[in-house]
Length: 343
Image 1 (cartoon, rainbow, N blue to C red):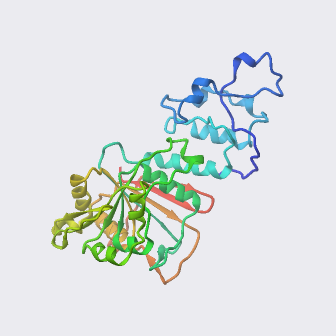
Image 2: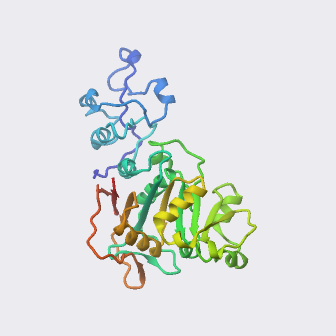
Image 3: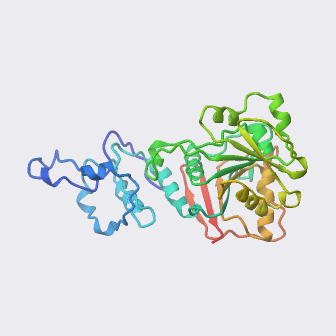
């Protein structure tokens, strides 16, 4: 997507000049700077930017450019959808440019404010495997991991199944990657609500046997929100724990994923759901979505590797060919991300 070049310590293109210093500074020493009022503002601008009004040709040989592809990159992000302007104090690496581009591409697939929204996202190998049983299996590259946290920021709750909770001991919180996320929002203390689908309420036994639970540690240390374990109404038991609540759901709708998320949304301050796994839930959602669409956004990261027959596979039992709608492909350094939305 972009040529890989050494960036050194040069600054990325600035789109304003200081008019007061034009006569006093020689062309070789003149620096392109951002006015004071622009420096104080957020890098995500709310004013519509028309890059056709900006004459970039005069900067084509400027030594402050980190590489020639900065012009192409700047044009790409200065459009009506992204409304971004580069006001960084140091050069952005070619790798970070790719991540910023991936995040910008994902913007139109995000939930709208205060609107019910279901996003299903996961990473898989070339043979449709998402990991090994009882073993945490890294699949995606650091670039696509950053995009995952970018997506988390824009959702109210993160959903995983109980097996994923047991096998991965996940954090299910937000990590802020300053070098790339700063183009879209300032560092946030937002705490996303972890939601664990635990129909038989196995958590009650688990907390008696295991003390090292990341969700518990994060909550007690102020690094995460209180979790919600969602169980069948027929299996509900009261549990007095500080770090999680239990929500019981009527048995007749629990395994209907569309109805399940609507029910949770009615009982909790959660409008947008980001479902991350595991395989049973992913397959179940894709199977039900074939019959009646309810997944608003589907994001699949495909990594260039094979995991083999021993790994867990995502392969829904569907009767017909299903084609994704409104598809966009985004290429990272190693991974490829498929983004799709139903409307």
